[in-house]
Amino acid sequence: MNTRLLRYSRFQVPEFLQHRLALPIILLAFIAGLPTYLMTKNVPPGWMQSAQGINLARQMFSQSITLYLPLGAFVAAVGVISADRQQGYFRFLFSKPVNVLAYYAQTYILHAIVYVIVFGLIVWGFGAYTIHFSVHRSMEAALLTFVLVGGLGLLFGALTRYDGAALIAVYILALMLHQLVTTPNALPNGGLPDWLAFIEKGLPPVGKLDAVRDHLYAGTALDMAQLWHVLGYGGGAALLGFILLRRLPLAR
Image (tube, rainbow, N blue to C red):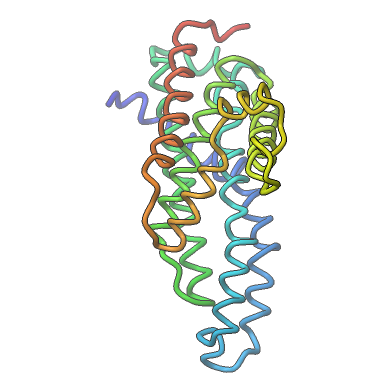
């Protein structure tokens, strides 16, 4: 890889950690870290290994620790391209002979690596205070989340400076329609009109992402069709984003 391009990583990684990922980590420290510390501080030895302690730890993991995944993925995906365009940084960044596509591909990959590693450390730390949770499976869940959310963020960033609003709107819409379609009310498509159910099928597979992550956490067999749907959708969005980045001007 171009050594000039690699030098930018000295700024890309600290910027991501300090100005983007710090907020989800701080929120998680208050939402999950502090309650975990208080919960384990005065319990008798071995209590966390009891049935009650195991259930409590698993409940906290599913309701608190995993909040890092969507929050971290959103801050990792938003503004990768649009922030440089909006603030005019690209004029400075690319005043030297650095390939635009390679630069943002490196940013995308570095964000993914740091995001996944940080979640692995969070899960390891939580497990050290409570019960064992699979770090490598948790990191796989984080990587899968970034593939989908990061790919969408890259695509929207190549299209518009309002990539944050677009990503949140599409994600929430996909989640809401999926919940309505899967509502057990004995009606076709959960009672949604056919045209709305058709739109739901074309939106990001957030429901399948949740299902695959649940299987990863539980250590059970994955539904490969769901897995490939998530990977294909996120990877396709990222690929389309890189194609648009190559063809569309940054200064717009």
